[in-house]
Image (cartoon, rainbow, N blue to C red; front, top):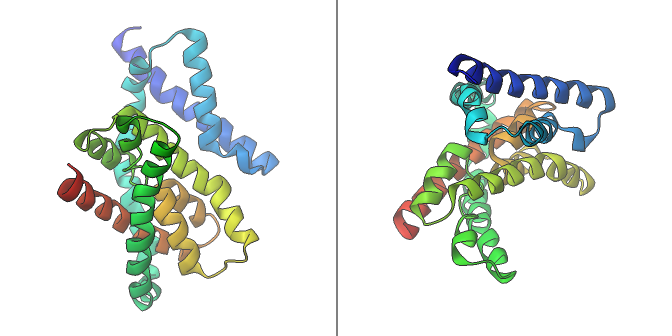
Length: 226
């Protein structure tokens, strides 16, 4: 592929598969048909069948990675309208992030070690509850494998949206602070975006939680683990 076609291919493949995912999700309303899951499966299949290196695909797909920054900033808009609620429950939010965040940091590490993985693989799980760009940098800093950390980050995000929200519903947990904290701590931006589909209040708390979680992970990794 020449350079122009390479960039266009990655960008359009990402956009097209995500659009297919949105259409399937709207049509069948199945949790496992989340657009992100569908697009990952379709992109993986195309790359494997066409024998296209991942690096070639990412030359164009990096456009959407760049847009992650503005997308995160855009989450501040609904948060602005829910600031009174966030201020009211700031104490529980901080305690929840501290407790749940530290548990999330080391539970994956200890579980991975328990099943027999080596230290490098286990260390790669530590930043899994941060957003992808932060997790990649922190993984390298603490001696993990950044590409493996990305997989853990995706599992955390998709798992929270696909399974976490239904579990909260089954358990009868309805308070927006409790729901927002749970998803924001465990599933960062992807789970937060899923919450915004049904509730600005839950999504706003989740936004605060996952930003604080990213700060907590960064502090722990840089000060204590690097």
